[in-house]
Image (tube, rainbow, N blue to C red; front, side, top):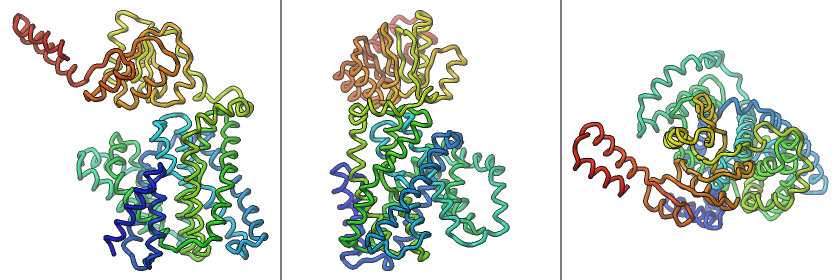
Amino acid sequence: MEPAILITTLACGMLVSRVGLPPLIGYLVAGFVLFLFGIDESSLPLLEQLAELGVTLLLFAIGLKLDIRSLFKAEVWAGSSLHLMGSMLFFIPLLKLLGILGLEQLTGLDLNQLALLAFALSFSSTIFAVKILEDKGDMQSLYGRVAIGILIMQDIFAVAFLTISKGDIPSVWALGLLLLPFARPLIYRVFDRVGHGELLVLFGLVMALVLGAWLFEAVGLKPDLGALIIGILLAGHSKSSELAKSLFYFKELFLVAFFLTVGLNGLPSFSDIGLASLLVLVVPVKVALFLYLLTHFKLRSRTSLMTSFSLGNYSEFGLIVAAVATSKGWLPSQWMVILAVALSISFLFSAPLNAASNRLYIKMQGRLKRLEKYPPHPEDRQINVGNPRFLILGMGRIGSGAYDELKSKFDGEILGVEHKQDLVDYHKEHGRHVVQGDASDTDFWEKLEHAPNLELVLLAMPHHIGNQFAVEQLQRLNYKGKMSAIVQYAEDAESLKSTGVHCVYNLYEAAGAGFVDHVVNDLLPDSHVARSNAEEMKTKG
């Protein structure tokens, strides 16, 4: 039956992704289909083990991307905490009322069980939000960072529940885990030496599954908590992002097993689907609560709305909480199926809502502005650019070099834009006029002040998609000046030229021409032929 399982899962995932929805909905459907053909979770013990690995690697990956400082921002820690409490205060009476009205799945549930369900329903989907933000290019936007911070706080709440639910008193040796931060220099030294290939992947698996999950379980703590903490321990390393990318497909593949096991718990009845649909109808309450809280933390109405839409769904962590609760006998097993259906339906509505979020904001802008508090959040104010003649988007090595070359002739008339705050601080220390912003993010262009004398925009961002997006935004703002861009591939050059970029420079060709010119000037200063060849190479580049 193994080939049939793989084929069914692949087919369902492809069918769902073709209509623009996350493939994980297809994996849930595949689980239901396989159950229909007589396959259940007990007959596939390996699948359950892979599902556990998927959850462990998910938490490890979250830890790798976590900037602890971001969690101490009020809109993140207080916003997520208040939303959790508000959601539970809303869901507990609602579920009780539905039970009184005669819904059989809720009849007879006590207050503790209702609180467990309310807790599971309070979460928003990390997987869905990250995919939406990546597809829109808004991972580095303020609303994207706030959404991810809130999701990580929710994940921490879930991990705390999973740890408590284990029920065992930790061993006295658990105190030894407090020494882990002192081992970080040694771990980092190993991290430096594992290279970039399969050794990096093995290192990540050892960190997540051995030093994290196995070690924490050995001293009586939840393995998932160990994976999260070890991920956080490694987050400060320069290769943490590379490690997260190298483990990405392992994590995604093992999470497929998790969603399959959810579907293998049983088929939903018509009443289960009806209750799940009722739960989806109250998702706008979750969105409205996020919107209310975030505007009260002085974020702009647009930032608050975009963040709230990203979080307007149910979560795979809700399923994980429900899976633990049903395995412990705290909830009837049918709730795994009900929550899985509610999760899937919430994605069906959330995907188009996020796609249309900007248009919806424009329509509701007048009413939403009334929610805003003043003065606005320091990170959500208009970006003051002054009155530059030259704008450089992307202040890496190429952007910095372009800035310094222009500065020798047009000092005081140049502005650089860079999304990494540490680079912005570095450039300011070296006397460059640079502001923090991500030109591949719609939010940046919404907050950018008008620069009437702007003559030239240099697109020096490392990714073609980001440069192309910036061109589209400049055209939307009716920019009439010149644009120049760097590219790595010939097809990217043609794409940018077709959208109106006036000058495009191939990074590798220009580097080759510059290299030859440097060699000629330094080693063959008197060679007429060499100088002619260098000029010819520069012309072709």
